[in-house]
Image (tube, rainbow, N blue to C red):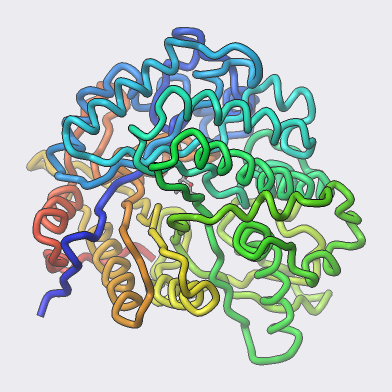
Length: 474
Ligand code: FCB
């Protein structure tokens, strides 16, 4: 029998401002760290930038037509801070606010819940010039920015998500440097972790006060790490990665405190004196839903100090590790199949993660805010994209969500990443995650088989078979 989901289960799709909007210098938008980074030679594959991206800034109405045709219950998008407050402080840009206001109104007209992310990595460049996330002031500026956008859009937005994947913003941005702003300063990365947690709490308070009927959430990319063996050393490596990758955020946001082992593990890098009295309480705003992004698992071992390292954590190659103070930990390559990102496909990690969260935070509702796969899609002679591998990936992962629900996890919805092919950060336009193909020469949108498949799921709440039984690339 096909797996079914409750009629209340929310089906959505997700995007992010810098990845789709383009119009980087239009209507008063200021530069963000991603403009600077992508325009720096050698930082992105093929030198790709988000200058034009999917041209969504001009084609938003057409894109909303696709959202409506898919029948989505919810659409997760992000607001570009430099579009609505170009310098990151001071005056707001009415043209930018109007863009999101129109988008939200049109979503509501179509009966689609707007789920707005306040920060999906496009920090105004001026704030980075003043120190970026490693300085406390940035969190305070974020609070003002939140007040501006919540004031403008208020509870027309169904769910406010403060941050997307602060793990990436802090560690890829400031430790390994594979993301903007490309800094490689381990102590600064930990300060960024804290100021992102603080920013989340400050913005969360704004939402509670200014939009009391809206829901509050945050989106984390929680890591599912498995030990290479049952040895104490390998298990301790997993514990260390869990502290840096998961509990550095779950701790303050859900428990109101940083875990003691994280502070001890990183003591050689920082004394955490940037954490002020009361900050962790601020970070611990009760969440209506915790957003979870899941793509893959990690295989972790204690490094013996001599054998060659593989550092196969899936987060891009750099001479500097994103895993601060974890030089003794190595990430092993994993068995296929893999996606075009080189990420292993393992839906059991999805179930495992959701059940862990249920165990540790039994009363916390959960939402899958991203899951999906990049493959080297081809347009067939019949003009279609038969992305059986993506359909298979989605089928197996949504089934894994259903499995977690059967076992008691309170999962309220699922957002496929992504609605459209888009600018995949340092991989530029080379990696296609969309269920809708974008032809970057013409900006034409084309539904892949996965979009048709997802449309059927959304309409019926019943998991359709993965037609053709797709095979993943390995
Ligand atoms: C996540 C990001 C999202 C997208 C997917 C593939 O880490 O939140 O913007 O790039 O990965």
